[in-house]
Image 1: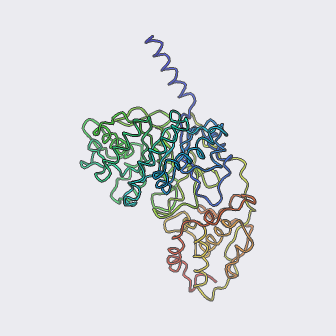
Image 2: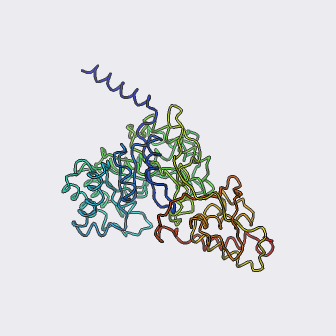
Image 3: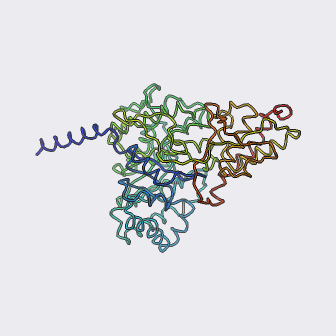
Length: 487
């Protein structure tokens, strides 16, 4: 029997290698003004070997499209719903019926996990969700059981890595943050008792972005960093060190066998000195190589499920953490490839197929525009960027090399595209005109949006999170050279 078992394990191991791509997972964000049709996204996932996906909300289009796709789904509950679900078992039962049972039974959607909240204990939330997360978790778990889904569908709480820390500066010193420690232990025990999983988000990019003294090479996987020695263990990257700090915290509190998945990890491509194509490719290729060869960490040799963040860029995400928030995708907003990645055995990324675009035309600053009032141009640019994504023309971004005229053109075009190329969307005080000549100037790309047909997006989905336009007005007043920069 021992020989048969050994042969079988070797067979499974070899089979995994032969398939190349095995067990890839990612986050599918939906904060876009012109989202890819869900059926195209599901095909994109399958073409690139993703068999698990995480949604941040129970989006009907996505959940229907995932039906009978062979892709396992983790569906999220936003933080702003936690109070309602915590306060009423009936609300939790209604949510499960509408967003889990309905799609499992009617569409064959393979929902495996419900994620309660998203990083609810962040320092910046100031205890906003500490009273509601556990009761919401308990009510959803009870509702799943009542619906007959308690064994198939597990629960989790996606957490930011700031819920644990180490006073020694080494992974072995890991423990939970004192202000949430008792709550964390209650949540972990409840999840463990009900066969669920713990989900943690790890962001080496944010470690690098937040600390100018952070050793850059320690953020990557190619063993070029000065190692961190923790007793018999040597760490060459922050990903392993961060994950094992959590494992130490779990072991220290009696949960050493708790299943853990990485809910978010990735690298953005724009709007920060370290957010660029080269760094993103370097990080994500190193991450994929680990996943493909089944590599865990020094304290957990078995590899966890790893949900790459993110599949596609989202031009409607909040930029409060930073303008880079809209540029985490390994694909562009339209499913086109940003940079090459090897998915195993030489298999390359495959782009989205069947994408339909608006007309091949752009809104730009008119060559004959005369600007007698420089403030009028600045106000027009600011207005455009209040309603469209202008993050790529910020300082240090991919379009920051544009001259003042092209800066204005970029802003005008993003508004024009976001508004579905409406005729009145390219009329900035007679300063703009429509052209069929592509004004792109590599690496800066002037977009043409996806044609979403007659489907009318809600006003809230049309208007990106405010804040960038006001900042842009100030910077553009300085950058444009308004008094004599445009003729």
